Image (cartoon, rainbow, N blue to C red; front, side):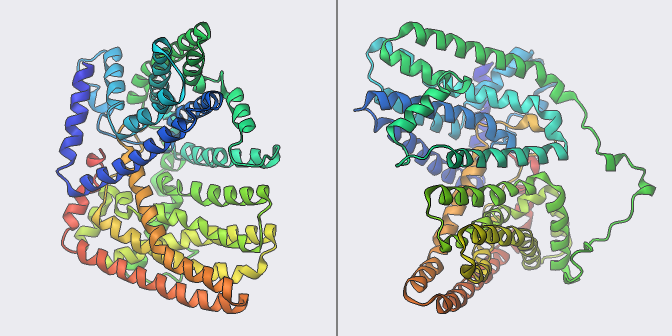
Length: 533
């Protein structure tokens, strides 16, 4: 049965290649995953002449990989509905066979292969003979299995919470705090010279050594030392943990797949008692009363209600704080640090890369209401800009207050339209040329970390392309600040960068609208949740 599930997953992936957009996304994801695999493998292999450091690096990397596999699917970054348990529930399959098949299917995809390749660097880094090689291999495979099983068990257990809109908001805030916590701990903890000194690596390895996430690393490192008893004990503990998580996953899978969603308090109100809501929010009376304004008003309401869209808050909150804490911790928070506030434009990138995918099947209303993709894109861009601008301004004010760079605040605010123009212009093109469906968040059990990483890797590739497009104005700003007085550099930089950003946005919207005008039905089919593979 496990082989049947694996073949089914491969067939689904192969059939997806019939779509040019999915093929491009798969290639981009494969390139990004290959880069990550090579980076992880090379990192471990670089310690092959230093056995002690190799063991510490193996322990830390194995623990980090297992922790990442466990937590990231909760955010939906690894969603995949190719093997949704709800679609298989009517088949005559026992729970052990269903769980076993889903586990094997979860191991088929880009992310598991890349993870296995990255962790295999331990085979090169750790000195071993024949017996030791077996323990290292067990540690590598065990870490991958632990990450996959832990992610599935955690998502299934949290299904009642993840089905609730408020629960998903809590998860967003919690993960944002987790993202900032390592930098905060580094800031308040003892400082060391160097990003990865021998002492800090040893301290980190000693801290995580016997945590559940590092058991695979413990098996590999103690096995390579010839400490077979300790390695065998760690292997038994790892196997017991995986078995326990499989039991939890199996026990909660039926409940998660059959339990009804809990209606919200607003949904429980009688229809007559609910006040009628106007399309245009009261706080945006200045929005144009045309198609673009209506789309902007609709997206603003979605931004306030849809957890998938509000997930962009993670980047808006975490990225600037991490940069600020890092700069302050290193003592390099000069006045120019205020410009780091522009990093908060990253949420606009995430929201604009797949704008029609966020609408899903509701995009049919745009298709039947007339061929006006330029107005639709303008409205979506306006809503995203209104959503992101306050975060950039707040982040810039915080940076200026901490670094004393108040003189750089006009430059930061002046460069914001340029950054948004590039991000939104590039996002318009990708939204039309490579749209993809997002899974239905009402069914969190469909989160499968095997192949859903394609969307995440595609987003990373698009962000890298946007960084390249942003390079010319960034060079102009850097040269102006280095050769001109601050006031003159501010005027020159704002004039050049904003003109460049406006040109990129207009060109991106024009290209996207011209291509969308002839393929609106294809876009609608591509963003339909039934295609969220």
